[in-house]
Amino acid sequence: MDRRGFFKVTGGALLVALSPSVVKTTLYAANGDLFKSYEKVKLVDETGEPILYKNLKKEVAYVFNYPYVSTPNFLLRTDTATLPEVRLRAEDGTEYVWKGGVGSQRDLVGYSAICPHQLTHPTPNDSFIAYVPKGKKTMAYKGGGVIVCSSHLSAYDPKAGAKVVAGPAPQPLASIVLEVNDKGEIFASAVLGPEKFHDYFRSFKPELKEIFGNIRKAKKLVKVDVKTMPLSEYSKEIIQY
Image (tube, rainbow, N blue to C red; front, side):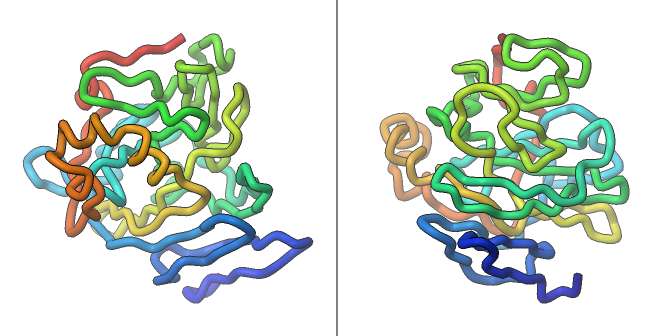
């Protein structure tokens, strides 16, 4: 596929297959956004140094906020390469295509850490949503290798576009479009799939006001770079069932 990417209507649904950072607009399908481009930002550590693809530990979830300063996401290198192309369906029936992981081993993925069921998300105090390594059993999913929301036991497959594999979640986690340059530096540039950002802002307005001072600051878009750290450092306690 060339750098223009493509989109087409098939069977009444708009299917999207995009190269990272190609489309600088929003594509609409049915009742929701499928792809929205934001500021391209570099993922950095606590000291401001770039996060490098080669240094990321496999099956360890990292957290970074994007595209807003208050919206958390997971960065993850899966144990093996992801599927190359997965057709997904949003709650309203809209279909879209996730094109797989990035990096030399095609194993690097990014997903919104806001569960679309009831908006469970990581906080500095705790996180009821986390990645469960392959081979580890939970109440939600016996085989591991999934992102599990322990609030209501929804499970998502990170190697298949975060499609729902267990529980009541109505749709996949939104995907954060990532790029890895020749130096191994990692960038976030867009969101693919139906996101819950504005529902999150409405539902957690008091909490966000306490953290950021007012909701307007919580809705500020991330620019230039964003701090990234392991979930185990971002949240004091990780709860898994």
